[in-house]
Image (cartoon, rainbow, N blue to C red):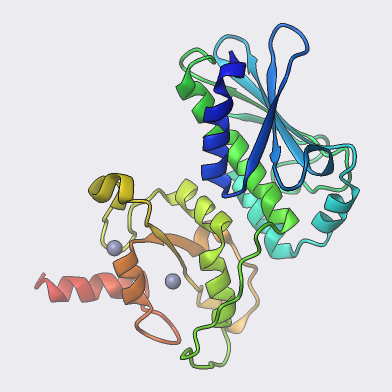
Length: 275
Ligand SMILES: [Zn+2]
Ligand SMILES: [Zn+2]
């Protein structure tokens, strides 16, 4: 029964999105559903996800907006191109085996235009939908990226632009503030880990394997494509973000303003170890 999974769902969603989450049980009919929303937005004023069993081994997840979401929708309509791109990339990172329907739009061009916005997802598991593992998987695979995408569009906990004082000014390319913001944005981190896992791209360390409970320390590095130095190629979070362990991340940023590339850092490490 989904009713017994309240705590599990809140934990998965809060860990996954970094936002505080509220839930309530929908008790219409035999198979109840859990509704999930951002606690500080209230259910009627923002996006609401619901999860219910679908067949014996599936879940159906829907994302819609509360009846009084006008202000939130207007806020979403002011989201920058980059926010929209990150939101779409988060949704696109959902496993292709999950069926996703966006009304008249597609995975590439969906937009929240009004309060009728609806995403409908169906996920199948190998085991019963009542198992904790199935509920966790539906949360991680579907609800977390959907709610994170909404949080990005709404502009939740906007990350402060923090420019280190000793950062030298440089011509062309991205300003350090932009790189910094991308690396600190929790949704960029979520997307990067969903796409690339938690293994350091430079040295191969997997902090979770080494430090277990204390291992959630992988960081996100923003690779600035050379092309962006001369042209204004749009930001692509899927290819420009890579996971690095804290050591390698510090190491690539020892060169300024342009950090060492991952290949250069690997070479330096090879030389240092005498390969
Ligand atoms: Zn590393
Ligand atoms: Zn970096």
